[in-house]
Length: 116
Length: 243
Image (tube, each protein chain N blue to C red):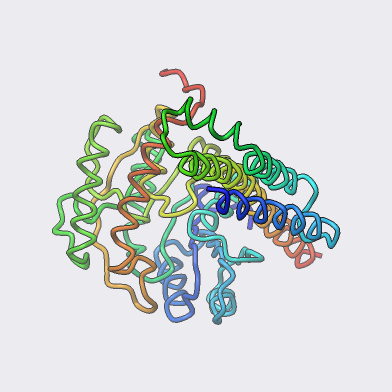
């Protein structure tokens, strides 16, 4: 149990460090780093608080706190991934609309050029 | 290209992706049937000589800057056609499967029946040749699913040989499914209470290139389309009032 929680702590700290490094290098925009940082902080808090984890596993009716930790980790990352899927969908829609508009504008410019 | 001077305000739309082997013949065949109808090829960032062949055959070409897939490609053509003021657009595939001799019949039904979309159907009074067994099975599944949703039978829901009037053009230029658009487009129309008709026609084997829907992709295709159909039904959008 303790080894698992220590591992999650290391993972959380590594994730926070990676995200901050990526933001500093402009590999991730600040607005998208927030989800990952929030997720990492939640994991860090859970991994450092055995009392909190025992309470959550009790509330969920789980006899094993590691199972509760695994469940919470999964939920946190599902939320982050879902949020990113929404962002990607919006970007894809915008990209398609922009590509279509660009093609139409180029077509119209070409038509005007040929008429002159 | 001008809607005001075009024959019957009609635009022939040909989406194309790497169709250099067939596109020239398709355009020439269209011009034989409708000599003065403008032909717009929407090139979905082909890597072959599609654009050059289309231009030399007498078509105008709308070049997409990057590959968008069939739905994005067709919608780009619909958007341009709507902005140029065309009243009717008939879509013909660039692989030579659709026989342009049926275009006048599609246009006639579109103009006289009052429906918003016509579908060139290979199964309506015909035997549906040149269709693989897997695709035929998929079409059978789609027919079963679409019948209660559309409130009328549709014999060939996967046909890309379609004509639309200006009202449908407006809807499609704003909202058009991206992947495998034919079936989902029917649901989009149904949500607007628009009507469609099928016109019997024969399809030919493709002249060149390969279908984007391979046997491996067929199962994914069926699941994707069915999911898309149900998502389209569930989409929140105020419905057009029935006239």
